[in-house]
Image 1: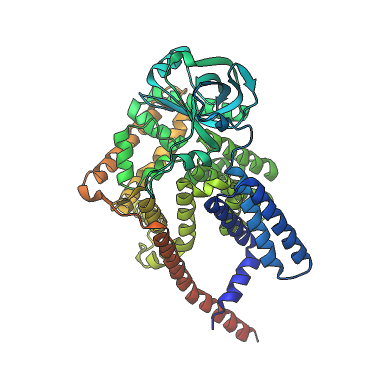
Image 2: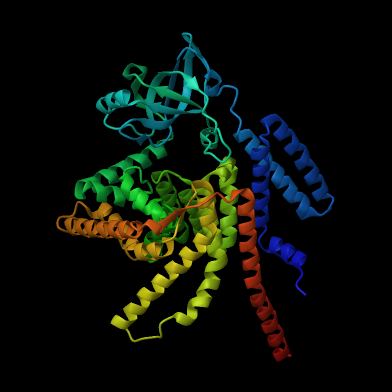
Length: 543
């Protein structure tokens, strides 16, 4: 008879980081749901952790008590993060008179024909002609007239640009109906608790000095330089698409194409994620550094630094941060000469991300990214085994061998897409009330082109200056971009490509993921029994 309790204890012993990550995440959830203030949260967490350490030292159910202590740490961390500090700029919200703020742009500005929106890190404030200490972030929206003045005053409104603003500070709006998008919660997850609107060119001044972490400034400058090179060698629409697939931002992609990607369930291809980091590891580690005579420590450390810099270039969204941390942990395991367990790597990634930003747990991108990866790790191996019977028969090298490689690749894409979709579709329905019915065939079709498109775009970014070769690569990138646009546009054109659905709600999501867990557990049982029978048979044979 299968003992579930023994299996859970065995899993904790084998991969303790999983239990630690889940406990920390549960603590964060409790803090966000309860809205606990920092002082009570820290007090409860401190007392609880002290009790946990005491009980652990006394040997009283050590692992249970230790996990309770970890959960309390998560509770305290989220309690501190979700409450503004005493000097936060949000304390000026509600004043009738404008406040003068000094600070710098702390995000990638979102530029539209009407406004420019960005996060602004405050360093000082002046109210009633008196300078007072101020800190924190604020969401700033600049109106079209002032935005046009800014475009004429500076060649680039980028991260690190220092500005002086004169604006009224307001509290972000709250949702009026249950289930609606909460602008206040979104800003709080980014550390901002107030907003400002600038509608006059005289209320904003671009200062000369730059601020912010210098490495982030360098990363954004390199990204803007790569975007400019793509714009010089490709038409505007194809350059925006290439930039989106390589650098993970579709802010420059025309809205019509973005809508087509959304309807076909392929929008994730325009967000930098694990695939991008996997290519970096493959190219720089697998093809270059590993075959050279560089020491392993130097080679792996170089790849980790490259992944970190690329993560900053891509905007450090949840999906690319998850992929960057996981890839770095994988490379660290290689550096130590140990095999990397992907389940433990994923759990460690969750723990690290929540320790840095516990409120990201409520971010839709965070949930979609981890739900997809967990589902792939759970179901892709089993789906591969089920589809193994349909593999083409071994063939001689040549055209038949190439056909087999292509079919196997398309099968792998279909398996991964299916495994990811069963976990992400309910979340998409819950947050966006829409569901793509052509996601599987669209992803398989686009995958046949997207990988080559990515590699060719990277090659163009590196070799654009080489005569003839740069031109040939640009033509290849253009052709592949047109192919991607054609595939996505064709798949999105039918009226049935996407349907509107009702939100399943929290209970619906819990029920669905519980069902997925039960299916996964059921699929594991025969394999576990066969492993035990095989070990018994081998033991009897040896005796």
